[in-house]
Length: 304
Image 1 (cartoon, rainbow, N blue to C red):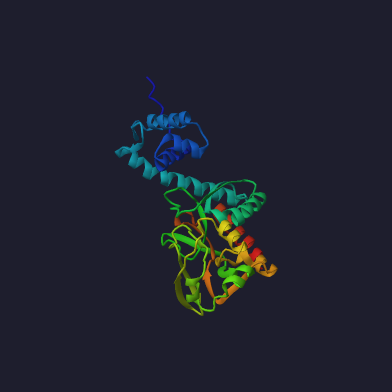
Image 2: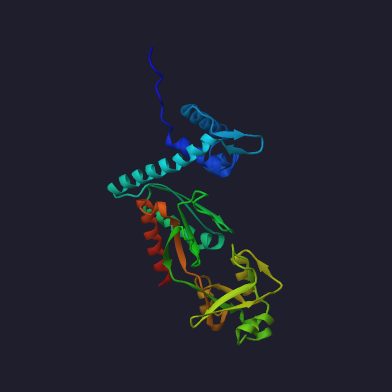
């Protein structure tokens, strides 16, 4: 009598399994993967059958890992990382980055600057399969399954690697008609009496502008009748003469040159450097290195 042939789990089944865990459900995992919930459920059943164990406790509202599921999760992460490193090594041998890259960034910067760069990256490396997600919140790139985050600001988590793509800063500015009506602030404390257009960004403290002047850090509490979590909206309000704005020089330089906005309190700026941030486990990834080097070149050209 022939022994039953053992079949090893497919990497794709392990990827589906990890996505179900991360999204805490079959439907949400299916939505992220672009598959049907029925197909995702089938792949999990096949994986459980292959490993001869139950991996998930299923209820009508959520899924949870069994004890064996926790073991498989740890191994699945290691197996997929090793498989990806093999894939990257083979890609480098053929001098052509290929495979999946999952990127994230903030809404405004991602839409206006990262998305056009990714379009050019895809043109240079057509073998890459790239997904870009945008958020207005802090992202845990490891637990949420991202390979790379393009972020503005110098606060890089200690467990990650960060490479500065380009130096940038934010400046204070307002429309000429607003300054004609309300006067031009001469000191940082003057902003407390002005209408300031407050932008709520991710984990920043709302209404507190932290600025730098000649190497010294100062802060001012600001307020005004208008605020938003969209940089594009507050920029338009500034152009409408509604108040003082703290905005990236990348976004306002043309408007300053055109005279539509006027910089105030020139000595005060805020760091807004652009960084590529990725998990240390991807430090040796050929496709990731190609992506980061391309973005560094792209943003440097824009800043000239």
